[in-house]
Image 1 (cartoon, rainbow, N blue to C red):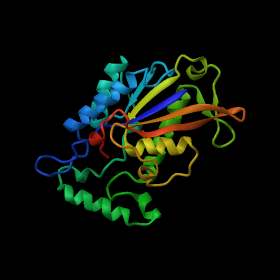
Image 2: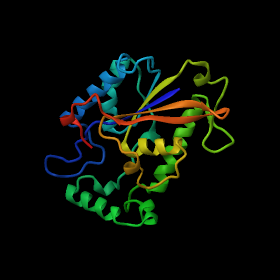
Image 3: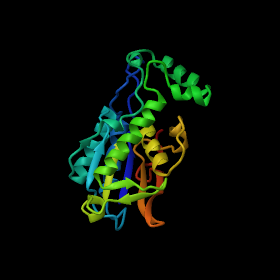
Length: 240
C-alpha cells in the first residue's frame, strides 16, 4: 500500500490590488506546476513497478482542486473531495485586507511560545483543532481502506477483508497542503505533534511525498521513502 501526498501548485494569495485571499486559485506558474506533477504521477516508467493509482483524494480548497484537475485527467480517475484535507483555516477577517497585515500576523505568531502557537491566529482555526481534524480524517480514510491502528502505538494492521489487504487498492494519491501533508506524515511516523509541522516536514509547491506501508514486527509501519520530491519541476519553477 502506497500513499502519495501532493502539495498544491503556487497559489495567487494576493489580488492585483494587494489584498489577501483566503481561498485563492493558482497562478500561471501554479497551473504549469500542476501539469508537471500530473505527468510525473502518470509516468509509470518514472516510478517503475509501482503500477496505477487507484484513488485520488483532494482538499476542497480551490488551489488543491485546480492542482488535482490535470492529475485526475492524466490518471483517468474521479476526484474524491474530502473536507478534512483542507489547510489550517485562516481568520475570515483576512479576506480582502492588505497582504502586509497578513504577513505581519505570521511574523507575530512565529515569535510566540509553543503553547501560544497552539492557539493559532485570533479568529482562525486553532492548531489543536487543525491537528485533530486532520488526524481524525486520516484514520477514518485509512479505516475505509482496511488499515487500522494495532494495539501497540506506531504499528498498523490490515483488515483481511479490506481493499488494502486484497490488493484491489494499493496506490492512492492525496492532493492537499503543506500543513495537512506534514501533519499526515508526522502522524503516520508516530512523531509527537507540533504546531509548526509545516517546517518539520517541508514540501514545496506541487512536490510529492511517498509513504509505503511496510511489514514490521508482525504488523506494519509507514515508511517515508521521499518528501518534497520536485524532480519533475525545473529548478527555476520550484516555489515554496
